[in-house]
Image (cartoon, rainbow, N blue to C red; front, side, top):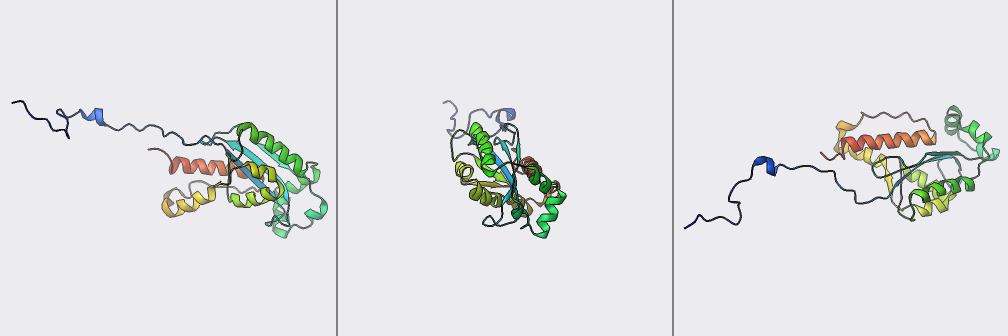
Length: 209
């Protein structure tokens, strides 16, 4: 009689090289872009404080930039600028933002229109693009109050880099401290730092290896 062959095991063991696992790049489950927004304001409360500057950078899901960045300084009347507390006044004076606000003639509506033009160019359908940034709930609150069309076009979910940072402190403390931020308190600078910070976590925590 011929030798019986188990249905559970191959008759001839494959060569080791044939069974070695080849890691392939993982396919993304979404193509929705990330809309990075940062705002500089006269204070912390959108009910009484106003926006002085807003910047936006749109990236794909792999953090590659789509189109040029936008950095918009918004004109505000002197009575609004007089409401700044000591910290905000010192911060925005040192950064040069208050001087830029004084020179600006750009209205909130004009700024929102400019941002919407770019968002709709790279994300054709509403409620798909994800708002991203550091402590982005703060920015969302001001956008919701002062730029409702833009806020309504974005998905309700946020990607908050500060959340990844807090989780890394608990689960991957070895990657904390490798990335340093400058905190310039200018909107576009802060966005670029947030993107670089998330790229750091992408390379150290989320890489497929």
